[in-house]
Image (tube, rainbow, N blue to C red; front, side):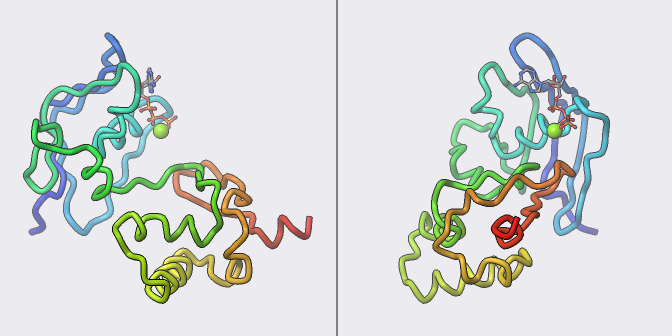
Length: 170
Ligand SMILES: Nc1ncnc2c1ncn2[C@@H]1O[C@H](COP(=O)(O)OP(=O)(O)OP(=O)(O)O)[C@@H](O)[C@H]1O
Ligand SMILES: [Mg+2]
């Protein structure tokens, strides 16, 4: 049986004095896909943002109780929220590229981790874009701005459609 990667116990999520969400207990297994499904406003994003400490950046937001990642209390005093956000990624409903080229957007994370070698970055950029099924669309436009990607559908996953090429031709 898989052990839990993320465990939430007796957690309450507040915005100011309003208690927005209560999670008595929740375990998210390793190497499995877990979906939060519910009506708008039921608290899916609030709980997700708390798992990578993004709620810290929302004025008035706070969490009580326990949220553990591989056994570590994500809100413990020795935890660096920047490190949490580096390890626990989040894909937003709307893509939000930096005002940089497509290449530099994809290379941003690896560069932040200290990778400078051009050939290695080229490989990472190509393989990442291939994995996202975007390579064929953008391989000739890597130096063009990533912000030309319009926000995708709000279906809950990042969707870069319509493509750069279709925007050019329209
Ligand atoms: N920044 C905020 N300040 C105050 N209240 C907030 C804030 N963000 C969310 N809330 C409230 O917290 C509750 C949960 O909202 P949340 O955005 O987590 O729901 P959701 O399930 O992700 O909704 P949706 O399906 O629309 O994305 C709602 O009552 C919402 O109004
Ligand atoms: Mg949401």
